[in-house]
Amino acid sequence: MNKVLGIFLIMLIGSVSVFAQDRGNGRRGQRDMDPAKHWEKTVEDLKLDEAQAAEFKKINDEFAQKMKANMEANKEDREAMKAKWEEQRGKMLAMQNERNEELKKVLSDEQYQKFLEKQKPRQGGGRHSKSKPKWDKKTK
Image (cartoon, rainbow, N blue to C red; front, side, top):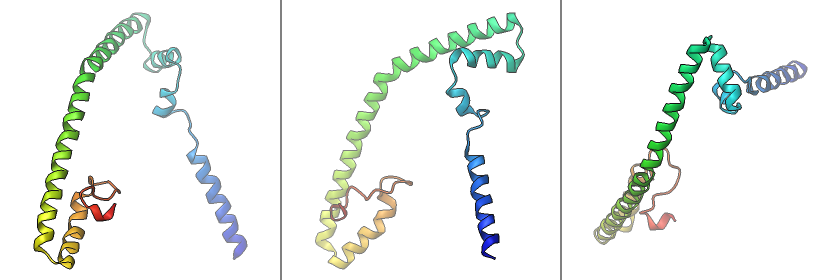
């Protein structure tokens, strides 16, 4: 029985390592590819003739320039939005702390702790955050 289990585990580990290797046919392989090789592969995959390849490259280059210009133009906007978001977040945390201090005066210690526990799932920094709520001073 132990021999069968051992052989099974070896086969399982071997098959997992084979599937884990990058085969180069996914997007990751193309992203790492030299731009010239990527272009050649695109022409080959789409079976473009010379006229199509020239027009395709022209359109693609124009698109890339527009995207780059757009990203540069919006860079300042993104920074401003991020700063505004941080400012709003700070205000919200301050209001939560103020509310908690007022509730602490009304509730018993046990009630207040229970209140904080109930708030954690909703206010823990987002749906997927594993961090503790920043408004809860006792959990820091």
